[in-house]
Image (cartoon, rainbow, N blue to C red):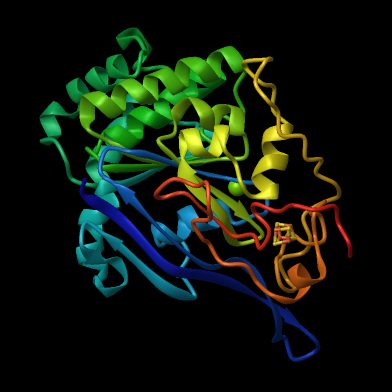
Length: 331
Ligand code: SF4
Ligand code: MG
């Protein structure tokens, strides 16, 4: 399989200004040294609670924020090395779909105008063919050509998300970052949009980076799953490993919170207490130690690294000192 995207030691700190001089007094450590790759044609999900750095990672890949450190390689090219002009081509390849497409579309434009504008910005499709292409795209995402001259407010949430998807598709992207793309939708509509995304992936050979706080959604769409906590990756594995053989206590806790499709299946009961600590001064050692029901003294002092422990398959790693020996909390 071809490596389409490679993220190496990505770090994104946001400065906090303070004092009368407005100097940088601290940093929000939103993403702190994460590495992963995405292969062509696969769906990799990033999951975690809000504030764990998922969206920031997506934005840094697209260079919507300039990363503090680290490297993002797309199709063999270091994106940071590109001039603004060269970056244009890649802007087309890499598209993003947001939770609320309404927030990123102009409410005064009709759907066809929105799609035509996207094609115009990236200079794809000859001008005279753009309207026909817009209508074709609408059909591709399950909308009706008679809706071409309607305004976004005339659509339901699910239909608006289809418009967002059509807009992303209009420039023939290779990689789509979907940031909480179905999170605002009703469960039945979520399923429809997920099925659409799967179909489009097959038809257009798309690769997805799917960002979601909802493991229930991630289960339906992922080939591989990255679990993030407070700016760090705590576990990576293929879908089966993450859902059937989770190793990190945080992954187990997230799984405990979702309904089990098979009630006879063993459930991993790990309660998740309290809120995510501040990413300004994250806990020492294992960042999860303040909430982990298995934390030991070592966890407070030593940062665990992603490791393939006994009983884990190839490509499945977790960052926990006690993966195969979880004992009740002692600190
Ligand atoms: Fe819990 Fe310690 Fe493992 Fe961190 S390293 S997840 S605190 S047991
Ligand atoms: Mg987010």
